Structures are given as structure tokens and as C-alpha cells.
Image (cartoon, rainbow, N blue to C red; front, side, top):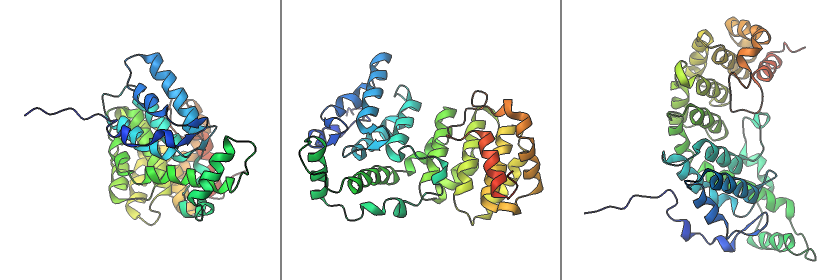
Length: 302
């Protein structure tokens, strides 16, 4: 009996794309852009990424269609045959989380999205009408925008267990990006276990450092995390040691081990080792910036 290989875009035709809207109007062009991410032509893929990003994540704003894109981006990132997988994961993060950086952590979705609680389908229809008809009334525009933001986040949260496996991806950058992504969703036992198990040596050193930072914000009352981070203060790579110290400062404040203070004290003198070029961590804040944040958390900032 023959079997047909499963495509990461299976089910694409089941979504009423033309009945949804993105930044420039009806989203009937989105399926073609998703399909083009699999093109053998690098320029076609580049154009598809640019157009899709502009449509569903325009200047950081999510739209009515954005949440529907999340599962397909996840499937694409999950498939080893997908070209430019790191770019797909980057787009997935942008759609799910917007422009948020670590200042939003630990993330509290109920509080952040509270304005969307009473949004109705009528509110959405009113705002969509206003977007494309300047004579229409805007309605509950801000609340509807928050609801689209929430819907994209919840679409990712519903399948965040898929991101857990990416922390073991053969591509170390995808593993590092997945580790950062997990900081934004409720801490499950498998997620915490995978973040703790990433090795501190070899190609996955940056992923280990990214996982350290995520662990700084997850499961605050879990002593095993503190123990793991304390052990990593003696890791062979300074970026791993520094992120372990930062995470301990976030978790423990001035109760962090003295060895962590010593690591933080070395950061400025070892700036070349932890620059974005030498140690490309997929977080918005620089490692020197994280060192400053850690000093602030323990009351030693200038």
C-alpha cells in the first residue's frame, strides 16, 4: 500500500483566507506566500518572507489573519526539509509575540490581554470595515487590535509543546531561538527539563546560554533550576557562565552565590567574547546589558 508524504502545509485550503484580513486587505494572498517559503528559489523565498511579514506582522501589529498563520509556520519550522528554517522560526516568534522584549518577562497574558476580554465579532467587523473605509466609524479599535495580538499568542501557546523539541535541533541557532521562545509560555515539566538539559559545550553553547536566560523567568520556586544554573557558573564558555549568573540574579536577587557575582564583575573586561558577533544570542538585549540588569536586580547597579 502506497502512502503520500505529508506536507507541512496540509490543511491550508481549509482556512477561509479571503474572508480574513491582514494589513493591506483580504488575506487571499497568504496561502501563496506560505507555499513560497518552500520554493527552491532563494529569491522567491526571500520575497515571500518579506511580503508575509508585512501582511501579518506589519510594523509589529498583528491582524485578523495572523493567528491562522501560526500553525503553518510551526509545521514549516518542524520539517527538516524546509529551507531557511531559522527565518521561519523568527517569523513565527514575531507573529506570536510581536515586538516584545525581555522587559515583558515574566509574561502575564491574562493581564496583558485583558482589554480584549469583551471584544465581540461585531466589534471586529466594525474595525475591519473602518480600516478599509475612511468614512466608517472606528469602533473599539484598540481593544480589537489587542484581541488579534492575543489570538496570535494563544495560537502559539496551544502548540508550544512543539517548540520544546526544537531545543534539541541539530541547527544550534534554531535550538537557541526555541529556548528563548519558551520563556513566553507557561512552564511545563517537559519544557523546563529540555531547557535544563541543553549541553554547555560544543555547537550548542549559545542555545545553553539562551536557555539559562529563559530559566531565569520560569518556575521561580524550582530549586533544581537554581542548582543547574549554579553548576553552570563553572562552564567553560564565558557566555554560558554569564547568562547563568544573570538568571540566578533574576531568580534569587542578592541571595545569588558569590561565584555569580565574580562572573558579573568580569563581564565588562570580556566584552569581546560576548559581543553579538562572537556570541549571537537570539535576545534583544546585549549580554553586557543583561549583566547590568543582573547588577540592578541584586542592588549593585551604579
